[in-house]
Amino acid sequence: MSDPTPNLDVDPRLLEILVCPVTRGPLDYDREKGELVSRRARLAYPIRDGVPIMLPEEARELGEGE
Image (cartoon, rainbow, N blue to C red; front, top):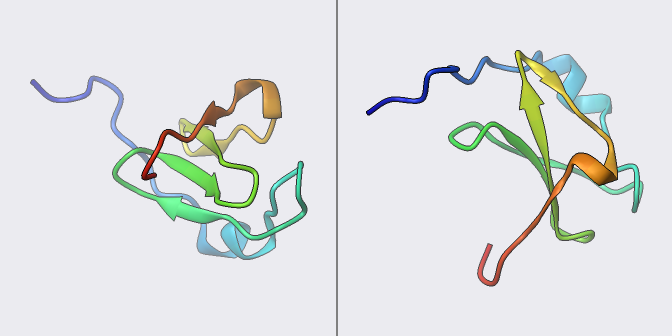
C-alpha cells in the first residue's frame, strides 16, 4: 500500500541554506523518508507538503544505525 501523502521535493536552493536549529550544522535530505537529517543532533526534521518543519520538538530522534 502506498503512502497517501506523497513526498514532495524540496527546492534545492532552500536545502543549501537550511541548517539544523540545534547544532547549526548541515542537513542531509532523505527523499525516501521525507526528512532533513542532522547527524550531529541525531534528529530528523519532517517535510510536510514540501515545507521543512525545522522545530526540534517536531523532529524524530534517529535510531541506532541511522
